[in-house]
Image 1 (cartoon, rainbow, N blue to C red):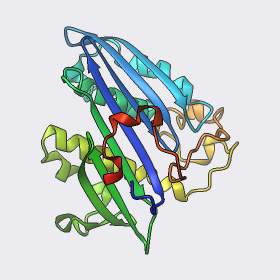
Image 2 (image 1 turned 60 degrees about the vertical axis):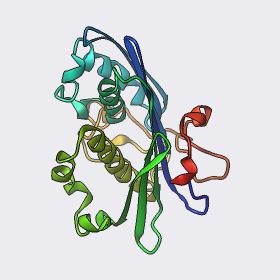
Image 3 (image 1 turned 180 degrees about the vertical axis):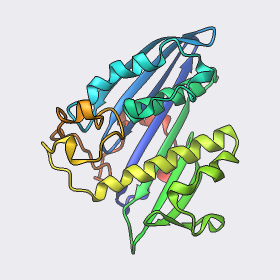
Length: 244
């Protein structure tokens, strides 16, 4: 990362092994991991760990994730649905794990979304240490790359649909990170009830959960601070992170 910049950081590491695949994520607001055991293309066990989450209700999503995916074929994970009933981050990690379950090597994503400078944010993604994507946005409107200029972030669906599998995954990851990064401009004090936000976006904001969910103190980490980086204990797997 270019150290003069401040902004949101996210790292994702997906590690396949025979019969088991593990996907882990850390960013300003979350650290969590999902492990899928599978046999003959069917998931036999789902384990997860909510190491850090922003809401008191977040750990409850681990049981929902297990109920969602145990017995599902790896090929059917994308079609399974029920994303908003789950923690969306655990859900996405499960999809990444399923998609890479038979890979021969790990996949590491490193994402930076800078804070706005003169109203423009820069979003960058590297995969396995190689810079892959760079976007410049004013609000949610693309300014770069030139062939996307004037397109809104939420309107990328048709563009992504035309990409190959690996390309589409990278674009989706950067799009979601760029949306989440907007949280850096929000004041969400500890103790705030989840009912302060619109209902239904994820497990925490479901009506039956939101009333007993509150913002946790000390859950957020600003990885712009000197000496901090997401998944620092796994940093060796994110080569050349300074390049993005």
